[in-house]
Length: 319
Image 1 (cartoon, rainbow, N blue to C red):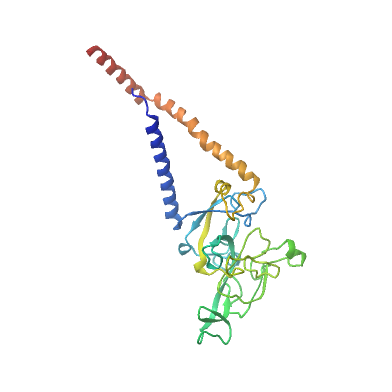
Image 2 (image 1 turned 90 degrees about the horizontal axis):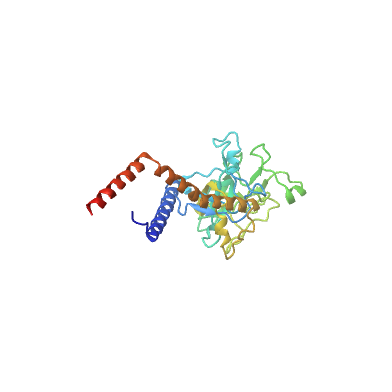
């Protein structure tokens, strides 16, 4: 029997690995409708447990990104309102969807992965006259006169007033600075949005919503246009699907620039990651000899070896 060519074997194994990865990426693309179909979580703003938790979003996790065109975003307000058809809906550890969005639509900014708390929609509006509005909020040549928040009792109101205490909408409790000032629940008082869109909040950010709507919230900033505004539909990159724990830590290990690297990755994630890598590396070492032994002792292989020996004897006699 001829010896196995190690170079040819290596090329074959590499081609097989590349092919499998390509098939996996294409399958995820077909499932999510988004490319890339995965994003790496860099911060702990969505973390539920300091040690990390499967089923929620931790730094170092990979998250499937579903195309926003194929997913209707369900807000926390809708998912916690018993009268809503989305009541009880949960995603990644809490009610409501987690969205990935660009800060004020700036593609140069690092996208944010936070939960959609509620959405301010246009209740009623009129066209702006020569680019001006006598009343209401001017946006995209419209004069917005009233606002509606799906999943709440705020329907065509001039100013939004919500208290997430379980009465009109679901419960969203606050701690830290907010609790010290006597604010047990996330609330919105006399709020007039700059534009229609989602108000978003990291699960681990203690009622400090991205838009600074809550009384004690500082909000987040974009690179070029100040504090983040309500997230418009066209700023949404995708809706978070399932999380794949730990594997994104590898990418964070080699990240540069403004990335926090692995500083916010839970300590246990490193242990689980190394165990996972060890299992992946050791599995072929253990399985391959076992498979070869089973294959070698199979009736078909024994018969083939017997026929090869007979052929070898006949060949020797002919010589």
